[in-house]
Image (cartoon, rainbow, N blue to C red; front, side, top):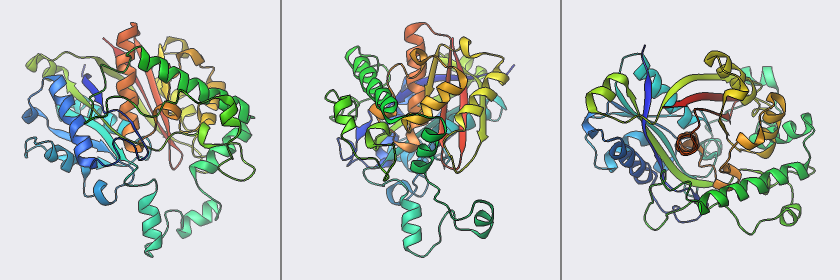
Length: 382
């Protein structure tokens, strides 16, 4: 039976908006992670057959196939190709899926998967904003789209508000969740839980997002992102800069090169849901991947679900009965940040290392994505 093994998983620290990584070119930041992942795997760079990176806002320095420019910027062999993909916030989780699928199909034996986003340089939604400003049209402005969904606002912010209302999630509950995220991330930093997965960049050695000085009182004083809404900056993921990379290898490559697998990609799925609610697809994606894997909620030792907004995770937990203690045990994007195209690979990296550290067997990762989609992945630690 074909297998896809994760033989290395690394990430840069996640920098805060206008923080320590803000001036780094995305190709250099991604190249740093990719080169470190290949070195950690102890694979010869020339044996890599493809590089698949996620990047959401492919404009300016992040355009023209940043996977290719990152590999070359890192000084790696010219004969290795690369491609950049966009499945919105799930882009680098999808990169892992594509890499694993290439290996499972027998098409390739060693593939690098990951992602990058420097949001300090290329702000969120830049391609859409610049395109509309230049008269190039709007993503949700086609006659077919309008006939189906009308001219209502389509945005992650509205989706998060709709979820909070539909599931009856109040602001106080969301703020308590956000505070937990910061506390868990700070505790993880103090314990050195991220040390094995982070490859420092320059003077940046640690994630810059977790806030030791935050409190429920401070959160309560923030204005909602929309008038009359419940979501604030405190209960939303942070604008961030970062990159992450994993090396995925076949059983034949593991044997041929004497590699040391960290985990295997057990099961994968991707699904769609309401694009107006936009952020609910992790619920059916989790159900689907568990069914395909032949596992139940109680079989999973660790869940990583992206904290795009607090109500996304809270509604998911409520619908599926997931134990909060096994969910994002080292904090999530509310504290650690969400460098869009890199987050899927960052979550996977953190999950694999934490499972190995704690002796867990199964991990499940899922994340909401623009357009009402979600990837879900089960990994098994060996």
